[in-house]
Length: 61
Image (cartoon, rainbow, N blue to C red; front, side, top):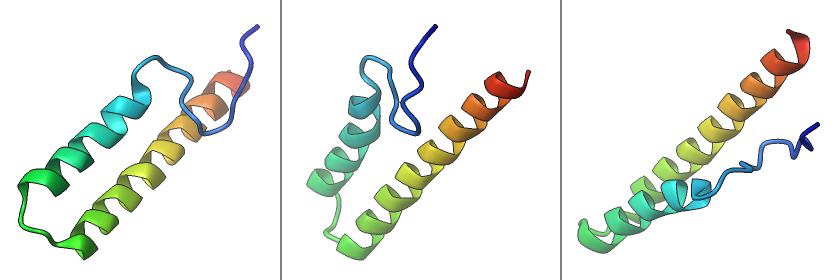
């Protein structure tokens, strides 16, 4: 049985898929730090909600 790690993704490359778009956006866009922080926060919270929902579904089914 797989170990449940909570909201932290246990997939190869997951952190790269989360951070690379944000870092590229910060590097190539006009520096709007408030917008970048908001986007990263929303993306991280969304990841946690999706991961939690999937784990809950797997647990209950």
